[in-house]
Amino acid sequence: MYLKLGKLCASVLAAAMITGCASGLNSMQEREYRAMEAADVLVEEKDPSVGAALGILPGGGSFYARSPGLGVVNLLFWPLSILWDPISGYNGSMAINYDMTKHHLKREMQAELSRLDDQLALEELDRHQYVTKKRAIESKYDFN
Image 1 (cartoon, rainbow, N blue to C red):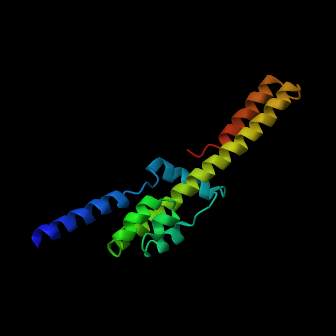
Image 2 (cartoon, rainbow, N blue to C red):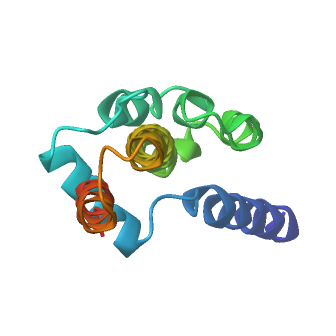
Image 3 (cartoon, rainbow, N blue to C red):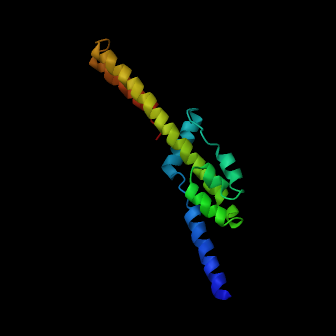
């Protein structure tokens, strides 16, 4: 009896550690996320609040945050997964938004730099103007 209970506790603890450590943002990414949010450029593909709310359902937060493997584990350990899956759903949603925003901003910056290169090639700008404008563009997209 005690052996079975010990195995169950060990399994629950292992699942909690695995799923509770669902990859969120590190401190630097969190800072960038907040800066992008403040600059109103954040691409919000997933709502972190919805991810947290869905975490109450069996595996819902993880499935919402595109982590089907964790979703299955949380489904199997429901209702205990209510302790960690809302956090996984919230963190996963933020990570998706962060990645989508970084990708979007990178594409926008490359498009602006390409237009600037074209202006230089057509000799609409001299070298000094080009460097000044290039630095301004790079600064515009730097959220570190």
